[in-house]
Length: 81
Image 1: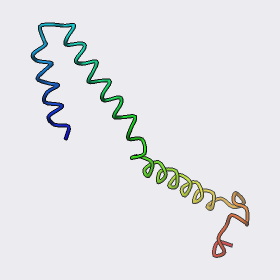
Image 2 (image 1 turned 135 degrees about the vertical axis):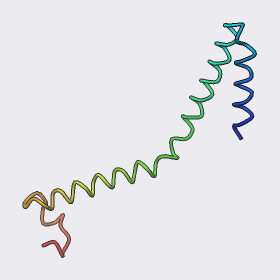
Image 3 (image 1 turned 90 degrees about the vertical axis):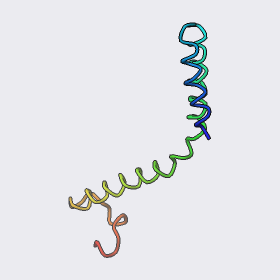
């Protein structure tokens, strides 16, 4: 999908190596396209962020369980009492 676009971009850079203004313009356009793509895929990482947050919460809970009195009785499972 992106392979032809990248190949065209690289070919354009090599063909415009002698004209610095066109080279910069091509590079700037490509960077803008990358930034636009990066903004559109934020939801792709939502699951990873949720898992990381849950892991951190679980880790904090296990740390608190090791030290008596840090967890309220309402926060403890029945088998932990």
